[in-house]
Each structure stands twice: as C-alpha cells, then as structure tokens.
Image 1 (cartoon, helix red, strand yellow):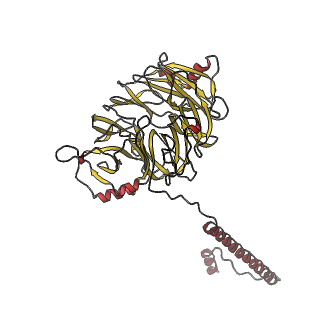
Image 2 (image 1 turned 45 degrees about the horizontal axis):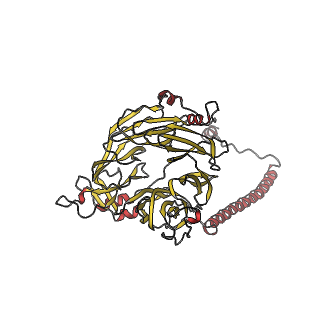
Image 3 (image 1 turned 90 degrees about the horizontal axis):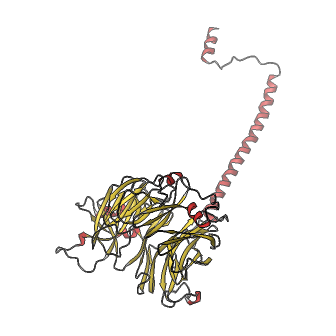
Length: 556
C-alpha cells in the first residue's frame, strides 16, 4: 500500500487500473473503429488542402516569373548632347517626365530662325506659322534617356520666364510669359497650349519673374496665379485664373523704387506673404492685403487668404518693411526650404543674414565680401542645411564658401580662378543625408612655375563632398560660355547627372548652342584627384572608388 501511495506522489496523473465494467469492451471497440475512420478522412482532407495550397503558390510564382512581364526600365545613355546651330540660349533649364517613362526629361529654351536649327526629329514649325517675327523663341523637350527631341515649338517672339513645376488637371505643365505680353500654359507631355491669354499691364510695362502660384481665390477648384509687372517705380499686381488663364477683374499697384526681386513665403499658420526686396530694404505684403488693395477694402477676402499675427506685429506697417540686422545692398533673398515657416536668407553685397521665418528676427549675420551669385542650398552635416556661395576675391579669382545654416559658421572654402560667365554651383543629395557640391572654376595647382597661366582659361567642374574635406575631384572642362547648369537625379534616388547649356545667350549674336547631359559616376572614373593643402592621405584610386560607391537620394 505504501508503494502505491509513493507512486501516486511521483506520478500524480497516473491512475490505477480499474476493473472493466460490463459492456465497456464493446463500447471501446466501437469508438476505436469510428475514431479511426474519422481520423483517416481528416488526414486525407489535410493532405489535399496542403497540396492545393502548394499548387496555388507555385501557380502564382510561375505567373509573376514567366507570364506577367516585369516593367522594363528604359536604358539611359551615360552621356548625350544636342546641338542647335545659329541660335542663342535662354537661361532657363527645367526637368520633368514628359514621356512618362519615369525618367526626368530636360526642357530648354532658345532663340533661332526657322531652317537654321537642328530639326531632324522634331519637325519644322516656323516662327511665322505661329504668328511670330523671326527669329523667335522655341521651347523643346529632350528625352532624359538619349537626348532625342520629344517635342519642339515656337512659343513667343521673346521669352521672359518659364516654370515647369505647374500642374493642370492633374497633369504636368509649363507656365510661360513672353512678348508680345502674354501668359500661356503648355502641356509638358505634348507641348500643346492649354490656354493662352494676352497680358495687358499698360504701356512700357515689363513682366517680373517669377510668376507665383497662389491658392484658389476664384473658387473653381484650381490654384491661381499672381503676376507682377513694373512700369517705372510702380509695381502692378494682376490675378489670373489657373483653370482658364483669364485675368480677373481686379489688380492693384505698389510703389517700390529700386525693385530687385520677389518671392512667395508661407508661414507656419498657413498665411501667404509676398516678400519684395529692393537694393536697400525687404518688404512683406500679405496676399490678403494685396487682394484687398486690388478689389477694395470693403470686399471680403477669400477664406483661404489670411494673415499671420506674429508677422503683423513685427512688420513696420507704414512702410511694410521687415527689420534687418545687416547693412549693405541687398542682392538676393531666398528661402532655406519649401516648408512652411522656413527661414529666409538675405544676401547683401558683403554679408549674409538669416532671418527667422516665423518671428522675423535675425538669427545670425556673417561677413562674405563681394557676393557674386545667388546662394545654393545643400547639406554639409547630416540633415543640416548649408549655404554654398561664391565671393569675388580679385577680378580673376573667387572663393567658394560653405556656410552652416544653423550657426552661420564657415565650414569649408576653396579659392579658384574664375571667369565672369561661370554659373552658380549645384548640389545633389546623397544617401548619408549630406550633399555633393558641384562648382566651376580653375584650381591653382594648374599654375606653372613662372606664376603665369598657360593658354586660355578653361572653366573646370569640381566635385566636393564633406566626407573627404581635403579632396576635390576635377570632372570636366568647358571653354564655351555656360548659360545654365544643374545637377539632377534623372530617376528616383538614382542616375545622378549634371546638365549643361552652353553657347551664346539670348540677346547676343547667334552661334552654336549645345545641351549636354553627363552621368556623374562615369566622370568620376576619369577624374583628377586634388589634395587641398596637404600631402595625399590615400591613393587616388581609393578616393575615386569612394565617390563611385556613393548613393544618392531624392529630396522630400
């Protein structure tokens, strides 16, 4: 008995064998027989379900692998060029997907007479056929993959501005202005006119660039446009319907002596302001205020036009002037990003000032003498906005300076020889959240032993990345005047290239205009490595390999 109790403690779930009750053997036999049959049928169903699932998975895999074709990505040439003879180029260069192949295409504007340009694959649409005197302005779209002409057409006797970041009815479009005074919206994919409207701004008036995209104020569901035109010291503002291009029945005017430029700024609260800058001052007018100046103070403004309380407290209302901490002639005003409430960068003749985009207070001021061109934005540290700017040192030399956006500290600079026709720098975002900086000039290691320069000065393209602060890569050169230059990602986060438009500029004697695209990584293969003020710290080939492994990313 004690042994049974001990086994029960060790095996608590083990029960003693009880004597079978009468008839229990027959019932157990029946259960075993029925359970076995049910278990067999269940096992068969499970096996069938398994093989059916397996066949379905194999069928789907087969369909996606062999039957349904994968989308074919177009094969892009690493380099291409297009030539226009007896032409002159406008300083407009835009990118957009005109043929829907998911590769960015290039749009360029030039001035030429019919029969004197390259029209081998674009047809021969003449100036007179469009009602323009010859020579006239042409707009052309070139495939980003191989440079072939997608479409080309005369658009004006003289082109004043071009913006190909517009949408109309969900499709990309280009908004252009030209002489005789008009506004037109062109379909980016075909070049056909969506709408064309004569612009009557009065005698001796000039349309001012840029044309601004503003909220829908006529309540037709399409964003509208605001256009400024200057006649002497008077600046006239005109509102245009984005849907049909018709000029709305109201306009207003301001007096801004010494106008230099303007831009649209959106505050964090969603209020739209127009920043005008003259040589001496910066002015801010709310879009609501310009609307009321045009239609009269008694008319209610649309609900999507409002003012920012903090801005209104800071602006000197009598003159609408924004207080600045710096002094000197204003040359450029730009936003540090396209986000609402972005800080505002003011470039004067000898200094940079960063203004808080929400409170309008000065964040920093740094001295940069003899600023040459409009600042370009990039990133020196990870996700840290930086400003690349060029400063004139002597009539033949300049400095390329990179300024940290958060503090105003100068992070890097290099001195180059430079001609006056050198274009502004360009940037491309890299996967490490920084930027490649591209700029033109001639590094001084090219000087010979006598201190003179051999031959005519060639502008050469240089590449800099903050990961190797002591290295420059020399990529290519150009002896022709450069009209426009841009760094572009031709595909989403890949295919980093630069586009160059070289030749005579519109308004000068016609000549040979060349539009070219080059893939950045191909030029890195044959680049010349320059070590800045230090002995080489690695082999040149390792440096090239470092840059060639670099990955790029799209903004946003």
